[in-house]
Structures are given as structure tokens and as C-alpha cells.
Length: 350
Image (cartoon, rainbow, N blue to C red; front, side):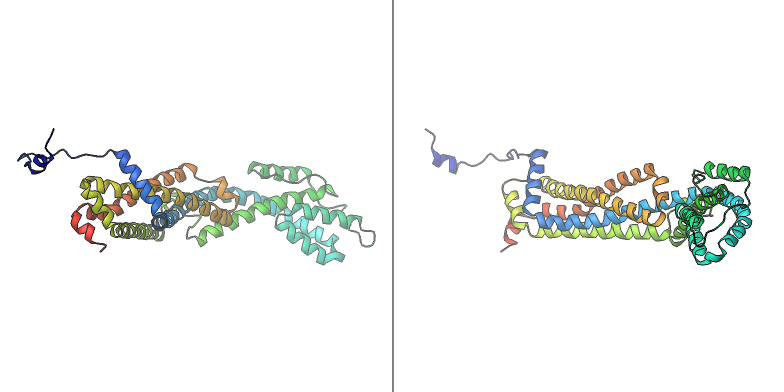
């Protein structure tokens, strides 16, 4: 039998260090995920800072690209619409003067309905004309209005060439088809003017050179830098707090043989998991807010000229930036945790 007393008193062989156990990466991942579950709300503080920073980054960056795309395409659109609108406006005034005479006894109604026509509400104007013609007490006579069918059809063809659909059918008198062209062209002109006004409010001049429109404004760049800096500081602070409250746990692991590299790996994995999750959520929130804001400002132009390829690149870059910031923000706390002596770590909570 082996004498246990002799085993306890035997001196270890000098000059030899026992084999240290290196835990696999899967074990580090398991411990990191378990730690995140245990400290869920603490983790949410870190994740929330990443979400806010990345969402802000995506909103500013993607909105800048959308605004540039809308501004560039609006230049050519505005020129085409203005050309058609000019041709319609040359034919409209004499027709409108004659039409106003017919509504002489219904002047208030005429102003209201033509106002709606200029807003693009052709159907409402058509219905008002039909009602006025059928009115038994105070009817409007539309016969004899100046009308050149070939000229109206030519204007309608110009409108169709820029993607518009003039309303030429169902009028109480064929001459009123010119109003159908006027209404649809005026509506498109109003839309283009509204987009240009929104671009000017955003600091973009629709008539500026294309190279200038593609550049991101200095204000947007500074906002992005500030948001990323705040994000990095927030991650570092959260990870330092996580290390501070886990001194005893770190000391216990080191007493059990955990290597410095394993401790660093644990904290870097925790930060990476939080960074990827927060970045993904931030990207989704940022894209949603960006799309809603641009739709409110530019209407269907934001979707018609949406730079999908550029936005996808922004999504990829944002994901990489979020992960990189998470790792960078955790390096200092992880090194601090790894360099702690086991005895000091065990005494820290006392």
C-alpha cells in the first residue's frame, strides 16, 4: 500500500512546472453566455449604449446617402417637369380666362375648385364641373370653350413621357380635358418643389454639382464621431464596472488555475456578444427611423431613388464598427482583470 504520509512529505521535483490546463474556446463561450444571463440587466446597460450609438450612426449616415440620391435625381426630374409645365402654362391662361367667365355667377365655387385643381385634385374639379353643368337653377355652359384636340393630345403625350397619366376621359365637355393635363402636371410640379424645399432645409442645394451633393456634410461627420466616441466610452465604463463587481469571481478562477489569457478571452467574448447584439438592434432601429423620416420629408421620392446598395454597405460597416468598438472598449478592463493577483482579487470584496 502507498503511504499517504510519505506522499505529503515528499518534495516536488525541482526545476519542473506542472502542466497547466488550457480550457477550449467553447468553454470560454459557455462561461461568457452564462455570465451574461446572470447579469442580464447590467448587460442591457452596455447594449443600450451600443444600440443608441449605432442607431444614431445609421440614421445620420443613411439619411445623408438618401438625401444625396434624392437631390441628384431631382435635378433631372425638375428640369423635365418644368419643361412640360411651361408648355401647359402657355396653353392654360386663355382657356382659364374663358372658363372663369362661364363661372361668373359661381365665382366662389370656381376659386375653391380651381384651387383644388392646382393641388392636383383633378377628380374633384371634374365632378364640380359636371355638377355645375347639371344645376337646374344656376347652370354653367361649357359649350364653345377654346379647344384644340391635337394640342391637348400633344401636351398629354409630354406628360406621359415623364411618367404622368393625364385624366382626359369623362369630362362634361371635351375642352375640359386640358384641365386634366393641367391638374396632373401641376401636382407633379408641386411634389418636385416640395422635395427641393425639403432638401434645402436639410442643407442641400438641388442645383449644386453632383460631386458636392455626394459629400457628407461636416455637421453629420462630427455628429457621427461624437456618437461613436460616446459609445466607446460607455462600453469601456460598463466593462470596468463589470470587472469591479466580479473581483472575487476572477480571483476564484485564477486560484483554480485560469490563465491570464483565459480571463482576457472571457471579457472580450462578453463584450463581443453584447456589441453584436446591440449593433444589430441599433441598425434595425436606425433604418426604420431613417426610412420613416425620409418618407415624411421627401415622399415617394425617398423610395423611388432609395440607394439600396449604399445603404447595405452602411449596414455592413456599422456592424463592423459596432463589433470593433465593443472589443476595443473591453480591452483595458479585460487586461486589468487578467493582471490581478488572485489574493488581491479575493480580498477586494471584503
